[in-house]
Length: 138
Image 1: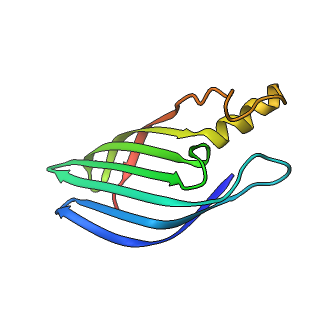
Image 2: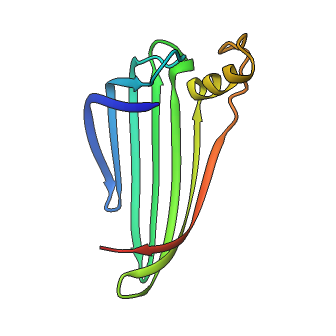
């Protein structure tokens, strides 16, 4: 699915490297092809982004939360953390870890195996990914 968030709220910068965006009035549009379980809803969105550079080491952490006012089944969150080390002229090595929870995505995947699945019966396993590789700093 594709997601588009439109919201009204405010931005808070408690420290130099941290930006927090809070949208108590946010609409989470979900786009998907075919007959799927995805549903758009109104809710609250919080985004926190921390970026720091310590010598040749770059750190980035991002947390995105959407809490649906309609049902917690339509809520989701994503948390990513990245670190990179600059070796030479902006070229470096890096690693990233991402964690995600989205019950709508879990139900959609479960329906492929068992058409009788519901939000109450689906196992919302934590999704994760990692990346390791070369990076370039513009």
